[in-house]
Length: 258
Image (cartoon, rainbow, N blue to C red):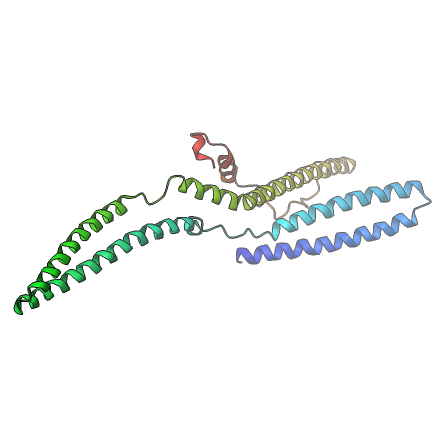
């Protein structure tokens, strides 16, 4: 049976138990009304009500845990998307200079052709004009090459940009982080309460069983409550203990905690 199907079956069982417990509480309320004039019966009914409500609260917490689906983790690429704008600014700056160099080179090529034509027609004025422009282009190109080298040498990220991105990520994720911490604390508290309740109930039942066995001459009763259970699926796995602790307390370096 698939894990998701097993979880769905467990959730359905718990939901049925919740409805049954709600009916039980409703019946106890009727019992309390009927026992209004009988102090002994009223005290007993109130005791049953407190126990039933406590059990209902525990079932509702367990149901929440059984049906809990954690949200999808935020993608690293999504969190680092803020860095893209710096790369784009850097690329656009370099690209713009390269485009200007290409335009200058194209004009220089045209001038060389025009100079050949001017030489063929012996057009001295045109030759002088084109030569002057060729010198201007050469000087301009040298300046553009120097500008390109300076642009390529500029840091990709301005001072404080990375810190600013990290601060933005922290502020963005803080509510989600706080929710996850709160959920885990609530479920951990519910787990401990449920474990304490089971252990206490086990002790009570064993004491009652021992008393009854003694009264029937020491003959043992057959196992009943724990048939088919090993308890292994009720224990929080040990790796989670160290992993959760390591999230908040690093053994090696304070930098290992976020």
